[in-house]
Length: 92
Image (cartoon, rainbow, N blue to C red; front, side, top):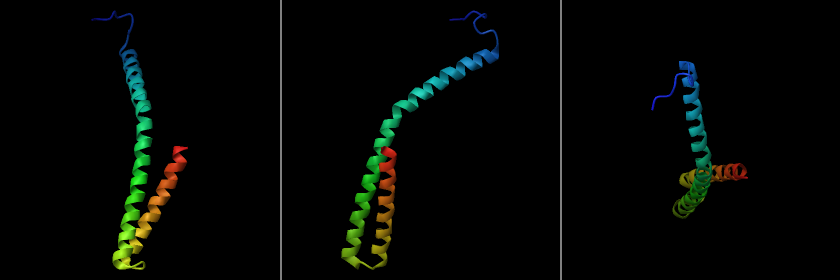
């Protein structure tokens, strides 16, 4: 379908129309995906905490509480809890 030349008399006018259409589409696409991204991030934080807790306790059982492995997983566990706190603040 060919549009009359009077509606869009210049190439910049056509560019503005195309930009508005693309911007509207991107706005709707981003707005729809925001809730899922937050939920996925929250699940990832909880999964990371469970994983580091498990690895820490395994390292303590196998090598002792002051071993290099236990200290490494204790540090990772601390980082996971900090990330979880960040996720909680962001979620509210």
